[in-house]
Length: 256
Length: 307
Image 1 (cartoon, each protein chain N blue to C red):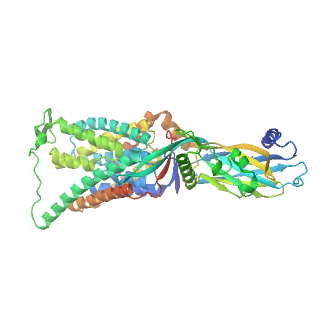
Image 2 (image 1 turned 60 degrees about the vertical axis):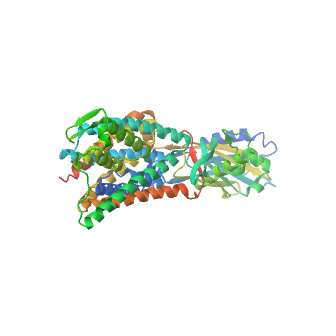
Image 3 (image 1 turned 90 degrees about the horizontal axis):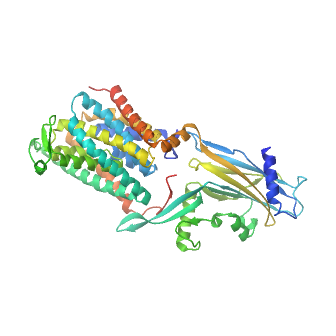
């Protein structure tokens, strides 16, 4: 049902782009709901895709290319740079990013320059260079200072395992492929968008969209929710808990 | 075993954190200090966000000080009136500390101020303690009696107005220095995630001439009260008290403290103080190194609005 619904959606969306072609794209996500529990150490989410041609074979003369993008929830973030002031390294310059992707994983079947024309890649935001960032204090995207902080943002996110780009889409049949995205232990919670683009001979011929919801499970969800909504009571409980543990320790290990 | 910390939003090795709490508890039992000045930096150096580290260590200080205060309470070595005055001023100080903490966090300068304060206070206190204990050790070696001034002797502090009588400590002093001391330590405690016992104890002995047998118990009650309030204020102000992290630290700390206290009973006071001074100085040097060496990565990334 679900797959059929997405296929229908994909066909409708893809229709104007693929007037001359018969292909449509259907995707399915292995784990649409990811739960972060206390022992969560990261998880792989596999996206399967089927290129529909009506007869199960690639259309004559086609050379398919796939780009699968998993975009994390947008978040406001600030990148700070330390500078040496009077011998001490302090946070000096900073840049605030508005609704920047908290997670970005791109997987393609071939190198990006073989996939599509640069203008197309830029329009679709495929590749680190093509992510459209919005800056809180800067309008000009070509500003060298913005470029510096943008590069730092991407590098820090890569270091945290939250930004990646690779060419590992795996064709398991002529028209069937899969790609796996690793959501690490520190993956942000929220709604992730899955975007899969089908190219043939450098032209976009179909695309499909799905989503992954990452949420904290059980206690891991309850504690922060409670800490935010009932901050005073949470604080009182923490203080009381601390005193009881201390008191208990003092009673158990009584020395005098 | 990895455990996900719901407020810090990262996974940590449960046994490492538990061990850290235990090791710091051991040291705090050994030297009779709270250990916050060691635990907060340890957590920060091991990747816990400074905001969460400072706020959560306040709960650990509440646990360890209530555990220790209990034994002083049994032996009636607490001046509740003095502790009460210190605590009231301490709460005012810690409210101010939490406020400054949140402002600095928004400005992105919290780490800097925390580091600078650690270098300044630990360097100063560690240096003074080391000098004092080395003198005491040398004197003991040469067979000279320790040059401790007796309680009851007066300093400039005793000339201040608004005097108040503290029967248990056999003191009649102005509330001004007591209030300043309590507020100052409450402020530092909330800002830096330390109990402040290592400042409070010498200040009570040398500045106010509180009898030595009353000092530790009284200081513990003041720390307990001030840090309990700081826990609540942090929970309300920055929502960064991680209860899971706190429990790990508390249980480890309470157990570790028992072993430390047993070993500490068999060591000489001046040697203990010299060791503690070296430890305090080592933490100060570590923070200083972090401030002046070229950072491996000058850039840092933080979510706006605390997630």
